[in-house]
Image 1 (cartoon, rainbow, N blue to C red):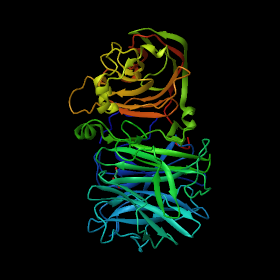
Image 2: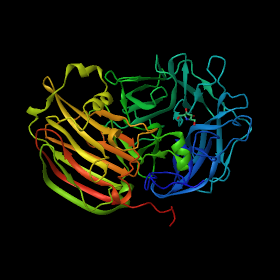
Image 3: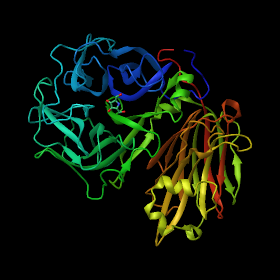
Image 4: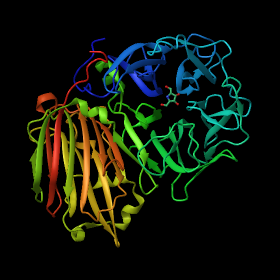
Length: 537
Ligand code: DQQ
């Protein structure tokens, strides 16, 4: 296969070729970060799934190793699907993953390093006492997968979750074990919800109630909150709630105002799925990996020779309100920042756009803070929009429909004469005495190519206090990915786009305002981004 370079990313995680999907078993071990991921060693479409394996010292510069797990035994002969790593006491990593067995059943297996003294953990053993968890008579054997990182409780048991579905109800089954080998299903799932379909890739972890520091999955201080994330396969988005883990009953209860299911919070309002976090003991933080699928066709993927990227690892922690998470690209990304361009106190009048010149706009990191005018002239939130979700609202009144305060933001991956651009922007509405802030990343104008592309107007609301009249935005622009963080990581949106003109040196970056009210770029910093080197070079 000849791998096509157009649209390939520079600083996002991608193997040299072929298909990738879910991040699996991320962990830190003996000075090395490990990332495994669902991978097809034979082509750019989903299939023949193995656990590919890459290692890094800084989560940015990677080196690909041989696949860690590939189908070879009756308990995984039809595929090595998603799972997680747990580091057992004594610094002993163990993987739990879903095997598709010789009868096409989904079973849970474990694997251990062949040589724990090798920090690269190159070889893994799948012992013959696998599987360690069978679906059981009351469980749907074709909807039973993606074991979580396990946590230890002082009753002497390990616990872990397996995602599932019973009719239309989404379920996270809870399993307990003393020795990590013999697992028993708890009488009640840790949580479930009617009409949400299969819960893929559940993730369950504690977060500190104040500060940014992350907690190990087994942490039990008594004061922490918990996050439960599920990947809903009917919409292909990752939803989470914050809540309480009742250890006596072994049940998770979402907070009263944390919405469970379809209309709940998402890690990302764009192309981001099957994510997984891990606790990074090196820097005491929790890090989130997510998969950004392609938005082009299978035919395009085969022609490109590759499909799928991982988003930039994000640090996650609880917002001061306690009601949502904040996410921010790991600080190590900044080591790739090259040439810098700075703008300050630049007014953006009605209908104007200003070019950010001097950086490689197809491969850039941009941080901007906007100073807002009085919000009196913000457009009224039309009551009929109440039934629309953010994405449909953005599709209806995108960047091109003039507003009052906004739309304003960035035009990323823009061609010189704006035949193509992916706008990332805010729009502020008056809704009674309150203000609503909509954030969009709109692919609808991203390319002149018309065939076989998905060009959604991704959007989410931003729960932000505007009393200081400021709104910030950061976008990571990488050829076919635009990954954006609104208001310090309150709302995140990832778009996959395929410009035809706005490529390489022909890509441009602008700040724009299409509202009647003048908005000011208080400060903007843009950096050309370097391509990571291999881990040891
Ligand atoms: N992908 C894996 C499954 C998981 C799904 C298979 C989510 O284990 O449920 O490649 O994308």
